[in-house]
Structure formats: structure tokens, C-alpha cells
View 1 (spheres, rainbow, N blue to C red):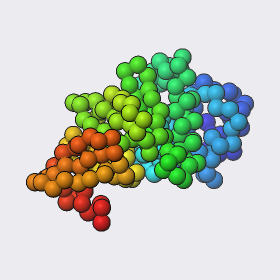
View 2: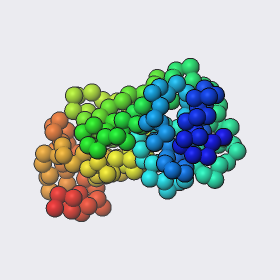
View 3: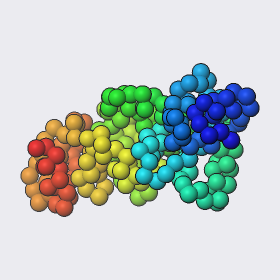
View 4: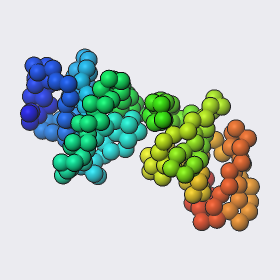
Length: 215
């Protein structure tokens, strides 16, 4: 155990752990201050954080693993089990790198998102996503390069994650990137034409919010 960034660094260098439970907030700094001081992250990380912590969105964007305070023993056991399963793949270390890159970047163009799939995950630039479409408990992503990805999470998850990046939910099944809308077509709800020439329906209940965003 360590009670600050400095003692945490010393403990990691001394004991060379397989797994570190890393509290986001700590005396004289935070988890990211600690990670920035390590030349090589060769251990798995489970972040420990409060539900309203500012870092929640960053953790979800990079698909880094975390547990919430107050810590539930079942979640703790589950976290260790998942780390044991994923350790062979080195996934968590990779996700931590993406997390650190996102935190260091002040530009939307350089923010990355991890899209989990049945056989692994894809890493894409947030700015390259034209739109996302619900498919039951999955989500289809459409990118500027013409590629599409079926992702094993709901559209609601990505709506909450991407709303600060100029994405807007215009329909229960559609989340679009405002910068790629090329035309709005009037109607009860109407439609939008996207830069890839796809047409997406606008829900009457969400029409006002969409038009407000263009003001």
C-alpha cells in the first residue's frame, strides 16, 4: 500500500507488481501524475474512483478497467478475475496507453476511442466517426474511410460518452456527428443527409434539440 504519488512510485519500482489498484485521487497529485513518471508500464491497472469523478468519461473512452467507491467485494473479485483473463493479451496495458494519450491531448482531432468487438477491439479517432446506429444491444459505427464496425455495447453508452464531442442523439436509434451533417430536410421530424450520402431520420421529439445545436 502507498499513500501518495511518490510512495506509490517507490512501491511499484521496488515490488514490480503484476496488478496495481490505482486510486484516481491521492495526496499531492493523482493517478495520471504517477503514470506519467513511469518510463514503462508493464503491469495491469484497475483504477479506483468515485462515480462522479471527472475521470469516468476518460476511462470509458479508452475502455480502461475500473471499480467504483465504495468498493463492493463482488466487484473486486470480478475485477481480479477479468484481469487474470486479459493479462495474457496485454490488453489493459494497451488501454492505459490510450487513456494517457487522451488525457494529454487537448484536441478533439487526436482523441481516441476503444470500440469493443466480439474478437477484440478497434481503436479509432473520435473525429473519424460519422454516425452510430443502434442494433439491439450492439451499435454499428460508420467511419469517414468507409469502414463500419459492429460494437458490443449499446448506443446509450456511446451517447453519454460522445456528447461532448459534437455528437447528438437525433433518434432513439441514431447518434450523429454534427460536423458531418450536410443537409437538413424538413418534415414532422425530418431527415439529415450525412457526408457519406446516408440519410438518417430525426425523431419529432429530438428535432428541436438538433436545430438548436445549429444555432
